[in-house]
Length: 173
Image (cartoon, rainbow, N blue to C red; front, side, top):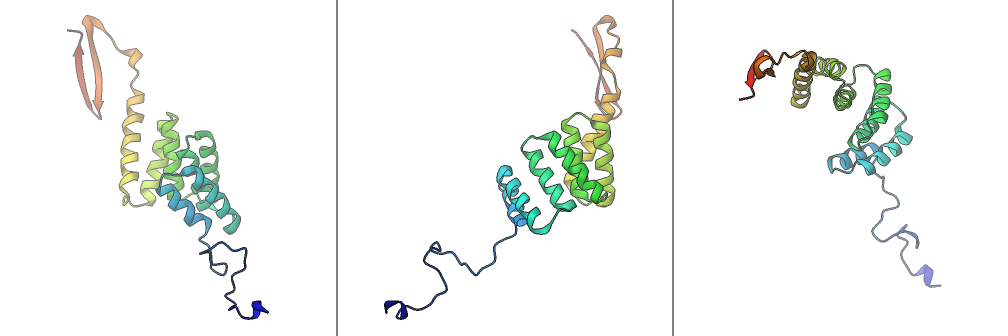
């Protein structure tokens, strides 16, 4: 008889206080992006995997999962997933940039440079971080062409490359 006197709010007795059981939750991809911005890549990875179940597998989902793995230091997994994202969409700029970062971390400067160049071209040079990544990859790829074992150390002098086209002669004095 008392049940008839209480208003029907639509909330069951087992629903936590303050939870709206009729409301829509935020999708996993949005949650993952927010967690990555907050510096929580492990939780973001779980949210991205949930998002993959909600929206399916596409280049954006794979790129996000790869980015989370990159942030966690799982370079091999990140590379594999980002390459898969680029198979689905070869012009997906975030995947190109993040794969370039993975390759830079693995000291593969030449291929990283190619990835950054593609991302920079597709982005029309609008994103500062891609431009900076490209400049770093160019500098490192050109520096790796110079072989230090070919140095001639006659008289205690060494030729050291500082940046593109600039060298400094150092002595042991």
